[in-house]
Image 1 (tube, helix red, strand yellow):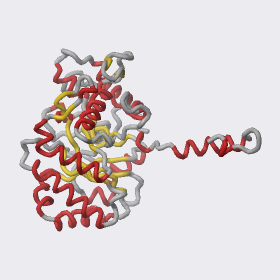
Image 2: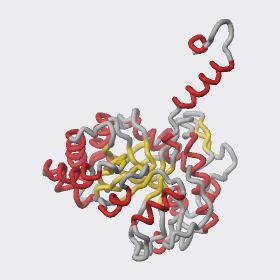
Image 3: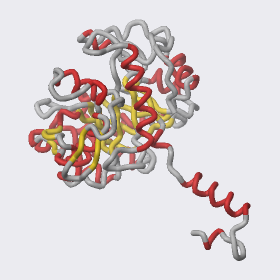
Image 4: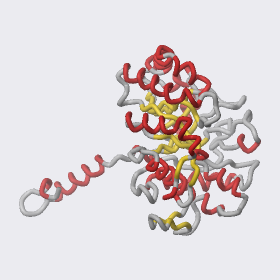
Length: 348
């Protein structure tokens, strides 16, 4: 590279500047931008127009919503906010059985909003092996992909599904990560094959809070869940990699599980993560601020298994949602429903 940018016997200051600018411009930093999930299970939430204005005010460049919503699409028209759109699992049977239904869904909710920046379509969220929709997941994904391809958007919009980390059978140490056999047999083998064939990432909802909550203080320390533990709290003897936080350990365990299931080429997008601020174990505003603030800075650097590869991540959630249950599910918001910020956080 040095020869390509040298003039004469030694590079000039101008050539060094040009080289630096080229290196900067060729570095993909888009994955480091942290999005926010826009849940709507509240009877006191602001309008979609106000929500989009809030995203713009705080430079939140990515949004996830959990079902098609034309009011949200209208509010997003012409904005630079990229959208992760969920298709509820209740729709999977119809979409799997009928290609025309998938074509109509894409027409009504994507092609009719050509000035909205759709990034991903998540076909189903946290489908469980025993769900009646599980058998329809992969065929529904394929029919949506067919409709996206027919519209000429296959390179622009990626089709995937969002899984829970409960799909992991083993996760410790991270190098031993593997998926549960019931998830693989129900749909994950098919999902992984689909994602590999189409160059799409796997969407994963990653919640160190729930791992900490259900551990009951037996093995997981609070600082390990909050990104505040000392270095090398956990050492993986198999890989000689060190872990300072639970988030990295979960993500790398999922990468190991993908490798063991033929999906080693896949990227992971963290489609949900966060920390509640009330009504649960160690659910304070300060802990929520600590987790989410540290998260935003941390995901730019990748994980021990994939260092330097930014992790595209979506924080759950934008607002507290008073119609959710149990009570600690109500208090994940970065903002109160009146759009007042709970705590300072720089999203990017």
